[in-house]
Image 1 (cartoon, rainbow, N blue to C red):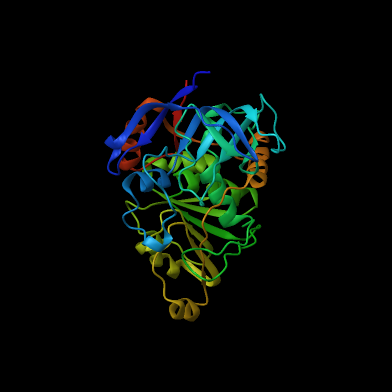
Image 2: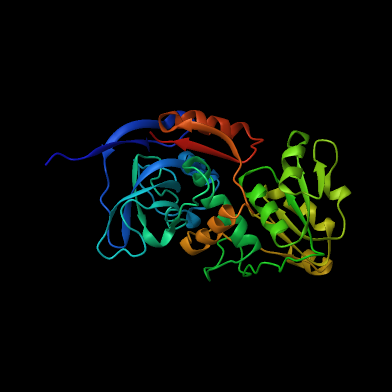
Amino acid sequence: MPTRTMGAIRLQEHGGPEVLRHEVVPVPEPGPGEVLVRVHAVGVNPPDWYMREGMPDVPPELKPPFDLPLIPGTDVSGVVEAVAADARGFAVGDEVIGLLRFPSALQGSAYAEYVTAPASDLARKPTGIDHVHAAGLPMAGLTAWQFLIELGHDHPSPFQEARHRPMALAGGTTVLINGAAGGVGHFALQLAKWKGARVIAVASGAHETFLRDLGADEFIDYTKDRPEEVAHDVDLVLDAVGGPDSRRFLCTLKRGGSLYPVYFGEFDDEENAKLGVTVTATQVRSNGAQLAELGRLLDAGTVRVAIDSTFTLADARAAHERAARGHLQGKIVLTVA
């Protein structure tokens, strides 16, 4: 019997977007506890280009094992085509979404026409949205959920010993979201509003209308004002940009407040204690049950997925080039014929 083949994007070497090559490879077979998904759309996320580059800025002890060649990608929306005998919860023909195998493997092999997926990483696709919008949900949506709503696991963060415990959000809570127009940021804004919080959105001026439409109560254009000089008495900062500059938001917090940098930077525990604030982070993990909760919010119209741009699977290089230009409004998605 001839081997079934499919189109996929593979890395034969690390480098810039030009190393993303469209190749013909065998269709994978589902292993124990897995299903085979015919892919309709793939979400593009920062770990995709970290992996493409070989994660040069990540300490060796924090890098997951991976070998070339590999198929990148973790966010998928598609239709179940086959189910392993011991896989539970899904049947052939089900429309599903998932964040695949993250972070145990930074590549879930989603940049392909077919992908195998642990059934536990999957949820039903929200019925009210198409595959393109559904593919934009998993990693960014789960990151916002696990930072703000429910961690949902007891795995330690690779970035710090302190365990991340989301602050309870309610009416009267003020949340500042830096990078509010991006993938994680626009979901975080909507989840905070769902919980009744007052939200200050930080982004460039081009995104003000978009963010106010999502429910932002206040908007700071960082190209005109420094948010750390404008915002005061904030209960929680979710810094969806993160990194070395995240410390600048400490001065915006009231005593008892918290700063959550999505991309962790350097912080001083003594300084945090003196200010009476908490700084914690976590690493998003695959979670089909939480993804199902997010799916219900999408079906109810409480949360929506914004799409920055779409590219065909074969044009993944252009998608990564778009990501490198920054200033995204929502998610980049690859479409699969």
